[in-house]
Length: 248
Image (tube, rainbow, N blue to C red; front, side, top):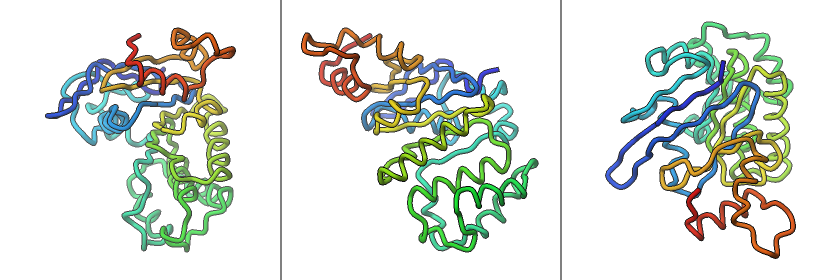
């Protein structure tokens, strides 16, 4: 059973169309979603979550069709879209008290354990947490209700190098057992060099390429110049593909 399967996902706006995006994320793997601003990364994530209604396509989350079985799907999802700034003055304990009510399999002992592991004080207010700690809090919530698929939108954006390193290590630890999977969008392609198993590249609302990271990189060898002795980095691939408007 795949963690996520997206087939021909389409969403039309007056000035933008996400057209026929298909990808598959296997269990226990991390997929990075790259593309410049406006490429459709956030649109794709919101469509998968049914925060916006797609105009076409099919989505399966952990083998369940969504939105047909949306409530069941959400029980196994951990989501970080833009942080939790709208609760800036709330204590973590207050947010948790509301959150736990929505999940049938909430594990209070696990929640306490993750608070300790991530050095989170439940009496702290959101505004008192760093950006990295806010992401860790949302991950702690997700782990406490047995999430198996994590969807993150720019989770390392704005983090200092130490916090980014800690978060990437956490991502690898989350998927190490083969039961949890992560799909996350990012502009920081060096993060994917370190932790991603697979890469999907959106450009202009279309999926330019998707696959296992090493194979993905090899598929862009045509962008290399005579001066390049090694394989291109993900950043070099993205910059050269965007500049040359290469179609693969």
